[in-house]
Structure formats: C-alpha cells, structure tokens
Length: 115
Length: 116
Image (cartoon, helix red, strand yellow):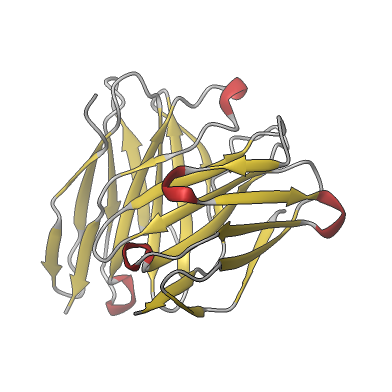
C-alpha cells in the first residue's frame, strides 16, 4: 500500500521568498503523484502531476515539483511567494497496482505568507 | 465544460439520522470517488464507483454507502449519523479507465456536514 508524508504541517515564508513544501512517498510500484491546493471552504485544485515523462514538472501559478526516485520525494517549490499562495497544500499518490486505487493524501501543509 | 457539482453545500443533521449527498461528475467522466476531510484525520478515501459498480473501497464502516447511476451521477449515504461524521465530504470525478491512472481527479467544492 502506498503512503505519503508531508513534512511540516505549517510553513511560513515571506512574500517574495522561496516556497518549499516537502513530500515523501512510499510505494511498492512506480507511483502517480499529484499536488493539490485547497483554499478555505473550497474543493481541491490540481497544481501539477508526475506522469513519468519528465522528473521536473511544471504546474500552475508558477509552482513546480521534482520527482526523485532515489529519495522517494516529490517536493513542491515556487521561486517567489505571493500573498495569494496562502492555502493548504496536499501531496497525493495513486498506486499503479492494477486496481483503481483512490488517492492517498498526505496530512497537508498550511502555507502562510508573511507580508 | 461544467465542473463537478456537489449538493447540498451545507447540511446540519441530528445524531441517529441518515443523510444523502449528491455528486454530478464532469460530462464524460465515468469514475466518481468520495473522500472525507476532517481536521484530525485529514483526507480519507471512502469509495470509488465506475460504471455503476463500486470498484474500490476505503476503510470505513458499513454505515457509509454509495451508488452510481447510469448517467454517472453518484450519491453517498450515511446512516445512523454520529458526531464524528461531521466533516467536509468531497467528490471527485475522473475518466476512470485503466489507461488513465495518471489522470488527475477533479474535485467538487464539497458538502459540509455538521452532526449535532
């Protein structure tokens, strides 16, 4: 069974600073990996996904993530934080074990942007 | 293209009652999954329906059930509500075929259920 660990339930950065949200996965087979963002009282919006075509994945709103198999990581970054980036971020994995697995989510990281 | 629609957005129920939540997926999507989101447990997978059949199930008691109709719309039902069932219930749709495992799930805005 796959699992996801997000390090840091809260991350605070200054506006304009680098954003780094950490995600490590555990999967016995090559995973499908996703980053979602959730704004208050809203559903989840996809930021980006790993499809095995490239290890560096670019998403919406200037976010990108790098898949590192040796480290079983899929960390999310953004060079310069904006106030509108304040939200909850979730890393998710879907196994490719043949079943139609649901997404397994990390606990989430609340991103706080300091003015 | 319309997104995933969940109704109602907010619901207040009393312990012991039952509740039915509805989800209309994106047109053409045949898979509908349900998730429960709580502050303590985070996002947890409930079940997934594909072509009117439950294809996968999370670790929830039998009080949680669902179904899918021929037009792919889905409902989930919770019977004998408990205080701990208070949560945001999210529905997600995706194409669902085996070749689209790397396709993202598109989420609705959720139904906020409060059990009092």
